[in-house]
Amino acid sequence: MNDKERHEQGMQVRRQVLGDAHVDRSIAKRTEVTEDFQDLITRYAWGEIWTRPGIPRNMRSAITIAMMVALNRNEELALHLRAAKNCGLSIDEVKEVLLQTAIYCGVPAANSAFAMAQEIFSQEAATQDVGKGD
Image (tube, rainbow, N blue to C red):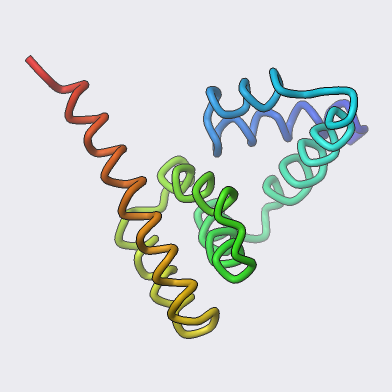
């Protein structure tokens, strides 16, 4: 695959995982300073790693969530908690990932991650309930 094809495949996976709205915002915010980085992550993170056949997407999602907890990368953690359902993870599976992080990353890190997950999942549930009205 050449870089153009890798970018196209990466963009497709990026949209499937993170959603069109997030990706569109990222593209709209590109600048001369950030455009090469955006291309890099689209080609390599999404076009090379997330497309590999070795493990399923839900496992990649779970691993990513755990790593974001371990690295204390809250902005990326929130992004990947929101994306978890797009990757086929249930709330119970996310909960299990976060419980695992309590042991290996520390209780304070997991505590923060659980609070964030609760807030995100509550917001999503409220949004879904609004859409079901009348």
